[in-house]
Length: 87
Image (tube, rainbow, N blue to C red; front, side, top):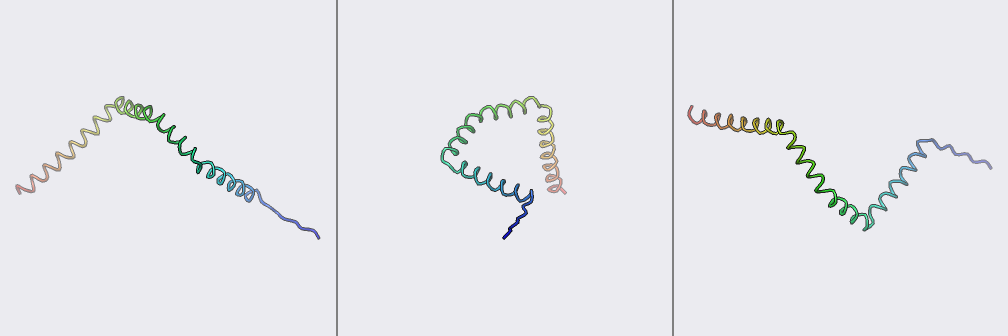
């Protein structure tokens, strides 16, 4: 009796990907993984927030433009409401 099976490269890739997903899921479901993630977020939090603040401050013209646009929108809305009330 002779038995031949043909397995494509895509089938092999799919099987390996499934094994990788299972290994990653097993690793991430361990209690230590949760604690490690929390520890890393806590360690990087201040640096990330400081970088965002510095970016906003360094890009102050864009911030001024956003504030001016918002003020203009609010003033236009107030003027439209006042015109409706009068007219």
